[in-house]
Image 1 (cartoon, chains in turn green, yellow):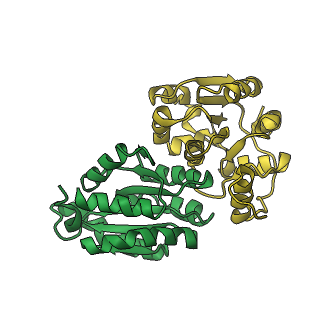
Image 2: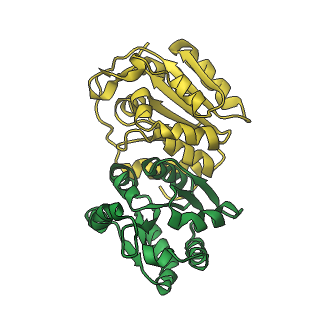
Length: 166
Length: 189
């Protein structure tokens, strides 16, 4: 719970006040925290691409949105990222549980893990890779950066960082 | 009645509300009829008009109308479930259902065969789902906007067919900024 709390605290410190998620067991604690938090909006959504649209609308309405998802969700969302969020220069934070990184027990997750950073690189999306607790301190500044450059940004949280966050 | 006729009939209702308009011909036709800064024209991301409007309605208090199409809703049908569970009372989804992918050359959609978006919306949990003719749409849309306590999904059954039209000349940042200025978020421009 300590890691998850630190992530949410830093996102909030960075100004993020609108949260969506497509679930992942590594995000479960963060979802629990957000469901009890009355200061920010939180909802689950069925699919990441749809979440990109809801985040775009939230930005138009003066919220600073974040969508929490597995890295697989990036694959579901490429067109919405390019032809909506980037086309209209909308700041949105992607908080990504980085499935398929070392420690991952499910072999099939390895495929998307191998290409996740290449996709984000191709999309020219700034990345913050969090592999240790110390990295989490950078989340608030990195989130603010999304607003400054008017762009989606991606925070990747490694499997091993999240897995023991009981 | 086709989409252009319908947009002409409802333009007086749209003019005081925040409108998210679907990519392609719907946006181009709306722009041609009467361009306004409170119209957000989609230039990409087919399928997401309903979702963008939902996010906007959750973030501020003004009335929001998402203008979507049958082909686009079929592409992002899961958002009807989110709308059915989360839409606030300032949200109205207007699905212009002409049974056709109008912007890509009028290929038939499944609503021209077996699929009922009304039944899908009800099954997804949407309240106040109304299916109506093009002639009835202005009245139904007015009722939805004036009801301060409920969200609506209106499915307007019209004929396919398009008018000859040019792409929208506005760049995306202009569309974004003048829209946010209308809401009162930015002061410049």
